Length: 420
Figure 1 (cartoon, rainbow, N blue to C red):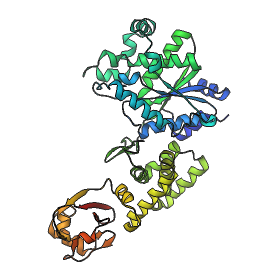
Figure 2: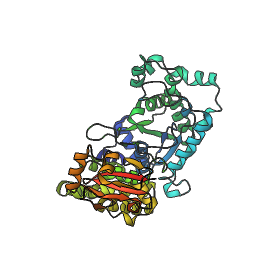
Figure 3: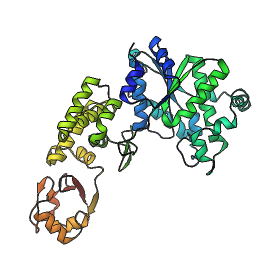
Figure 4: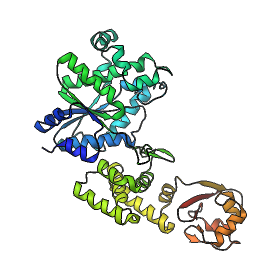
């Protein structure tokens, strides 16, 4: 059995654990049941959640038994960790829909019918709906002191701004989940993000108090870039697993644009490449960073896993067309997907427009003088063709699909004009 703890250490995927030596011996001695939960506060998981699921898969490949929990009950309150103010409550209909959606997304990695890639799927609403409030307070709340909960960092930060009793009690609910799974599946380990550490430890303590058993906790580091910003955020918001929220090409571009300082770290954390393979990419990043081979490998891996092999081919086709300006090779749908994020403006009720006026209208050049300089310096291309004539006029015949004009200023700045 592969040593999963050593594997996680090398990949930089351990933030905190309970007694790590004891945990390591346990994981090396037998197949251990463990669980990882996802918060259904949204109808889509994000890249940060996905790192947790990839980590769960690593445990599974080392012979351990995963339990995936969708928080249908905890979602009724909402995880207060990391929040500066009280969450808005989600209605039951929305919550059930969110649970259904994130369960599908978990299936991107785990095939619940395939024995080699199987995971138990549970919803904590199934047991909490049967519990009487007084029984819960008597059997669980009794074992937590207020001082114990006040020691949680996220509670300390919320005391001044205010925290409801519901959110204050969130740790008790998550702790009860761990106790329930320990009884039902002999679950001996909970994995979660570093912001979940206090809640996870509450479960460890509750099981010890109620049953006398020693169980364990492991947290994954917060996903940060080298400059300290949260990984998984683009200029247009979060990178979601839901295809309607984040297209395959948007995700592809996000990973392609990973900074050289971060790419090896993220290859280790997101992919299943081994140490020898990672060393090859380290050398490439050092000696030929302009080829971005490591970034391409990460992007391909993520797109194939989340969107499928065909999406990888499509993303590469769009990327090449944008890079070389050969837009005629793209279908209308591919063009729209590739330019979904670029600044867009419209032309209405005109038969023709001068190139300089087009650049001003789209805020592509700051002034007519700047527009002339850009054109004369061959910095402007229209639908992939450089235009150096300041008197050039565009008509509907210059559009692609009788609708679009693609303007590029310099090497990377794209703009989309819709001719209506």
